[in-house]
Length: 349
Ligand SMILES: *[C@@H]1O[C@H](CO)[C@@H](O)[C@H](O)[C@H]1NC(C)=O
Image 1: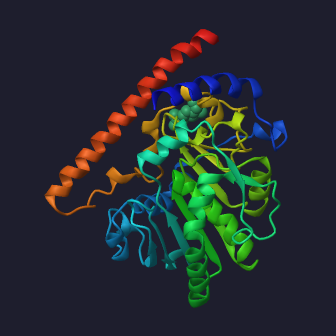
Image 2: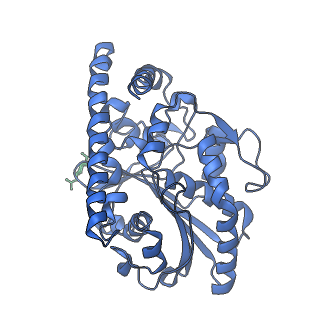
Image 3: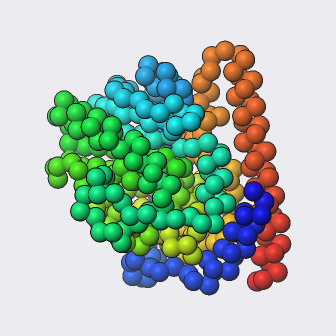
């Protein structure tokens, strides 16, 4: 793991700086960064809770009995898929408070997260015409994300259609953390292209990686104007895969700053304002993987260790503590690799 991570680190130290951003919006628009009030930021709390719940046990979701679930009053899960182990977990349900169908994707185990960091041969693939009808072949996304999306897309589309009709709803909200955020974004586009025009499609993601090329992002921004991707401080995942590999972020950045306040950053990879993520974390040497789990709006941490009542038995409590320890070790390891990397990096400055 060490070698590919280091070479990626070094490669990005050169290329990310040298190539800069190809801006999809005029430069002067990038300067209008807006601070969010406490009240505005807290409107995202329900989505933080939905995302957090995706890391709980499928049984807990079916019974809507998880830490934070009681705050999402009346939500009724109607479909769960995946097991949270070998296959990522997702759930769909109806949220009467917002008269909305909600689709939530779990993030991923650290193993596949690692492969995003270390895979120097990330390939892009066009969107398949079954789930993304009428999309140009130049529109391309990370092939791993596309493959993961294809697994759950048919049952999610079917369930969304069924619930919209049954509840006479006109609104779908997609939520996800980490790779789950990438899947939520792909779902948003896919549902937009497959559902009738009168249905509003909205998405909120947390710590989402980049997922496609310029053509993808142009299409996405046009089709899904109601999109927010929330990034906590110096999270590493959102700067992956790097820009020099041809990946671009969608619009909708909300960046949570070191002092806990948040700003809305216009543009795609806004590198014009020091408060936005592209500038705060210019290279992976400045990133912290530990920021990936939050704290997100509503004082919510998202990730497997934070679904506290996940296993009632004390024995699995130990397993949980073990997993948390492994996660912490991985974190500190990656941070250490980055510190080594930053020595190299400062030598080149
Ligand atoms: C937090 O930091 C930002 C950027 O440094 C600053 O503009 C803002 O005023 C600070 N907010 C608070 C509440 O201290």
